[in-house]
Each structure stands twice: as C-alpha cells, then as structure tokens.
Length: 282
Image (cartoon, rainbow, N blue to C red):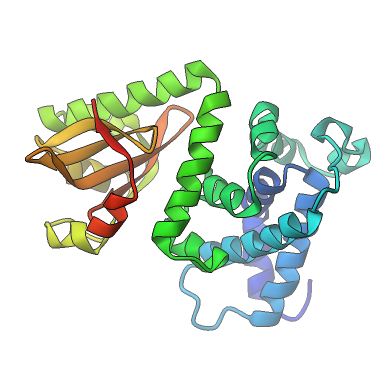
C-alpha cells in the first residue's frame, strides 16, 4: 500500500475488525477478503480529510462493498465456509484465524442466507457490531426508522433458529442489568457491561435528560444507576427495557449482548420510531 502511509497504517490496524465484519455479512472468508481489499482501494482514493472516526468510516465503506456483493450474488451459490481453500487459512496468523473462527457461526449463517441483503446487513452491523442505526441508514440509503425495522425483522427470524441457551443467557443479562439499575447496584452494573460499552440516546431521549453518548462501562453504569423507572420488556422480540408512563413506553432501551456482556444500549424516545416497535413489558 503506497501513497498514504498514515491511512495505510490505520487500515492495517483495523483490518481484522473489517474482515470480521465482512465475513459475518457475506458468510465467505474469500469474499470477505475481497471486500476488505476493495474497501482499501475506495478509502485510499477518498482520503481521510475531515474524518474524525476512522474506524467507523472504514466500517461504513466495507459495509457498502458487502452490500454490493450481496446484491450482485443473485442466485449464485456460495461455497460453504468449510470448503474455503486451506492455503487461504494458512496465510493468516494464529490470532487472525481465531478471530475469523469466532466471527463465523454456521447455524447463524444458514439463517442469514434466508434474509435479503438489506436485512442481513442491518442485523449484522447493529446486533453483532453495535453500529448505530443512523450510521447503517447511510449505507442502505434508508431512514433510521426503516433501518431499525429491517434489523428487527431479521432479528425475529434469527431468534427463531438461534441457540436457546444463547437467547436465555441474553435475557438473564438484560434482566440482571435492569434490576441492578433499579437497586442502585453500581458494581453489578459494571460486571454486566463490556469495558468498551456504549450507550446512545436519540434527540427525544436527550430532551428527557440523557446525554447523546456515553462511552465506556463506567459512564454507561453511571447513566443507569438508580434508574428506578426501568422495566424489563421485549423489544421487537429481543430482551430489552423501557421507561413506561401510564402504560405507554416513553423511552425504550435496546441492548446488544455479546459473549455474555452488554456491548451497547440505545435509548429510543422518538414517538414515530416507538410506533414502529413492538414493546411488551415483562
């Protein structure tokens, strides 16, 4: 890679993450490698002037490449993951091989193959990599509310085939979090959060007193400590929470649980968005 040494270094630093994103979206390590290389070509032509979040920008570029690949596949049958040439895997170091293996869940991929390209991309970026819907919407050229609906439909289908133990574990983690929030148990909240957890609030939630973004487990725990109005709920079929007033949800909490830890929480208060969501208090 030549011409932009700093960007090249940044790209190489983030390559394992970009490869994991592409692998989960496309389901093929070979196609993922091609997508990451195409993302580099696009990024190197564009440059990083004015870009504050380089990882987010590179993830968006990679996602767009993956979307184009999904749309161009048509009925072309992909080689199963197990049939990827051994030479391809041998080109990766042990750490990269382990990361790639962790990024692949064969049972999940079978379900993802039944989804449309937009549903698949919205679900993977949001539920697996905690990318906010307003960023995903720019990739899909749809509104954040429409993008959320795509991910919700995909999530319901995936949950129907997901491992029961994984679903139950996610519910336990979210229920424990909301209980700790009501009880004011800061240490318990911290134990349930990924160290790099993030919480994001939409404009309506901000008008109720939230900050737009909370970065890191300590900040997220501090936001939810003593949240006595938090109630357990299913949100579009997934474990979540809500602040409910007179039987109406005012703010919904959407959780992304990865490896038994809460990676992200979205605070959704926009009435139009809430109207598109199925919120059932537990």
